[in-house]
Image 1 (cartoon, rainbow, N blue to C red):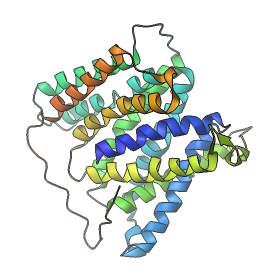
Image 2: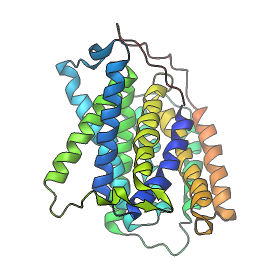
Image 3: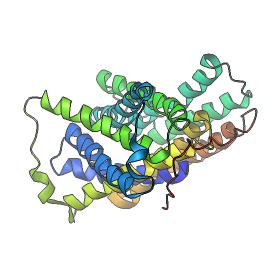
Image 4: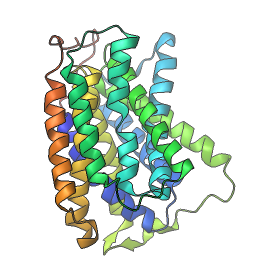
Length: 311
């Protein structure tokens, strides 16, 4: 499920780049995906059994749902868009995908979990591989705000994994993702309301690279948001947050390959980048086998039917 979500997110990167080229700005696109995903998931929640009962929220759950949604479903993509607007995409991803290391550090020092030493070796290999994919030894021009945005996205991505692991212990996947996108949509509306000179929605009627922008937006909402986020949330019933974060590091490699195929020679990978991609996969494998014990699947919350997700 994590690998499948990574593939969908990777395709979504190229699709989102085309949408941004059409004239949308980053806050607009982030609001569009959050509001569209919330509407789609809300409808799905009402149609599937047990209907509206699934959406009931206890007062004690409200803070987690708000923080989980605003951090992971709004500010992570927003900060990523800021980072790629000021730095190369590969460099921005390198900063963002330090998140699994932050999750591992939290598990080790925040929760006192036991990990085998090879976890750190696997993470080091993965980060080295990402450095090769990004070609950090080249003509590197780091922008201060871009670096801050990249690291900010990493911190909030780690928070997303950690809170997601807690959220699936309290709620079913569908309702958790629905309310998280709802919180993200509200945050987007508030930010847009206080932002002067916000762009209009006219680009949605145009086309980019011969594809209607409205169709690209549908991908961003459905296959770039609803399906992959639900897959990640569902995976946390079977994997600890550390493992989900580590496996998710295959996304930059997949994103580079997809961009190369979809956008042409300008995105082609050289030998060093291919070697870096292999290092990432090796590091993921080593780190994933470093857990001291298997985690039992998280039981479903009582009286809540689980939706079947097909991709």
